[in-house]
Image 1 (cartoon, rainbow, N blue to C red):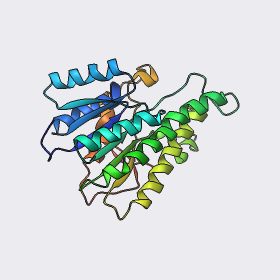
Image 2 (image 1 turned 120 degrees about the vertical axis):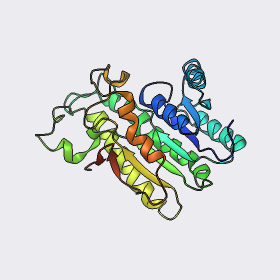
Image 3 (image 1 turned 30 degrees about the horizontal axis):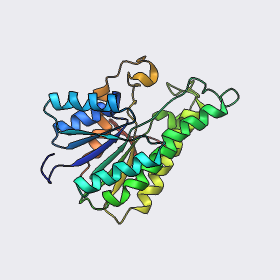
Image 4 (image 1 turned 90 degrees about the vertical axis):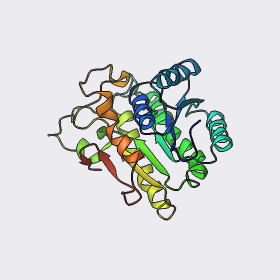
Length: 247
């Protein structure tokens, strides 16, 4: 465990991909990286890899669809650190049965929302008392350009043909959570922002079968920036590494 001055950072879905890279980079910045993952084996393996790189990391079993694991993780953070400085809501899923509205599986949409929206909301609600104990609490919601209503309605957009009703709608809903939570917390010191890891190109991860060429380091850049956001930084916005994104 690092000194009390280190940032205490919880990243959900952090055993691989962008979540792992966010943990790695924040750990290199001196943070205590709490690896939230549903698999004990994968979570502990991720922690071992981070520790081998000289990063202070710890595994917390956290399944965002399971309130008991969220509460247990919050209780552990409270007992060991007394606060949480940064929450990165990174855990997210897609579903092969998802597709355009006329063809998508309603069950697939429900599955996607359970993780991407309800899970993020449940984790944020549970961790909020700990974030309010931080001098500079931050919530970073990992969204997607596919959640932008403006981009989805632009036929000239590079990814205009990607009409995944469940996934795109879940990221739009996550952005709404960002806007409303930021407004609710505007006088608390806790800043809330959405980040798009995939603009200008989708990141090569398990979520898209590594079909795109952007690296996970590039995909993690916006989340890193907003996790380390200074006190005069924005709240309630949607950003990629290159700047603001349209809603």
